[in-house]
Length: 221
Image: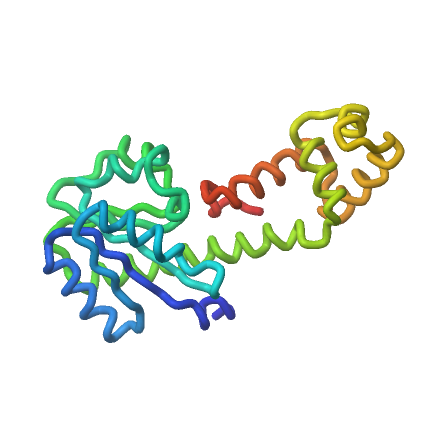
């Protein structure tokens, strides 16, 4: 078991007007050691996201969202609040979740559980969701570590190169010589352990998306 798995605070957010869903998951929480947040409306959910800020800055937290399948369109990639786009979700309902709906959501972890469900079945899905989110957070840490050793100038040069700028254009943009650009660029490529500009572009794109909260963190960093 990793340090993150040992120390993660696990929370299930239940977004469903059916009180039996929250009660059942709360019973699981008592024995499995995770907490439950019950929210009855999407508006309440948005307020919780804004206030909670998912506690990422205060320590490792793993989340799972359990919600009614009727809200699936509200949680599409274009409309879901950016802080929760990488959080695993379990949709519950009386009808099967269409395959095209899963593609619209585009989430790294998305399950559908038919009502009524057994607590044993839900437990398996919740544990898998927590483990998936913990793995995502480990990827966040690894991706962040790539950039920790860059100087401000090295990062700036790398970001501009990743945008497609030439050395001359970077030099003009930053007001430095081409020779200085080349030195920073070489140091940056070495520190990031990159072999090509294509690798550089992919890595900076992933880092940018991670900071915006829209990154599919299941991909290798």
